[in-house]
Length: 91
Image (cartoon, rainbow, N blue to C red; front, side, top):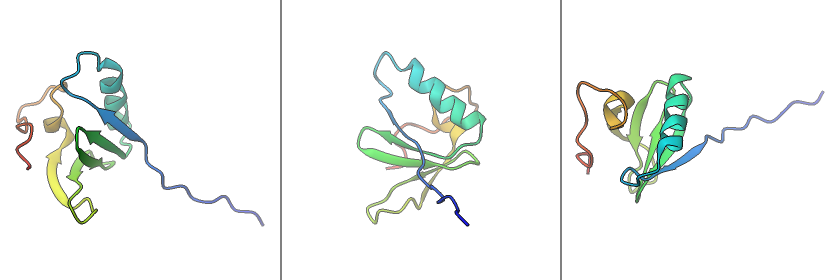
């Protein structure tokens, strides 16, 4: 019997927050968050993992995503949020 291999590849999005034309990337991020899809996010020189529950983790020097940042609704400046995370405060 033939079985299909399980693919664990998550989509990777590269986002430049200060670039003026980012509407398509912002829509793609919002779509992944709405559908509770996990993905990797590369911002400048940092790499994040957003899991299906919308929690964000930063990749550390050990190569693991084990530094907790917060919830996605407070992380992205283009989303309406009540308690925004100051950009770069996790460093």
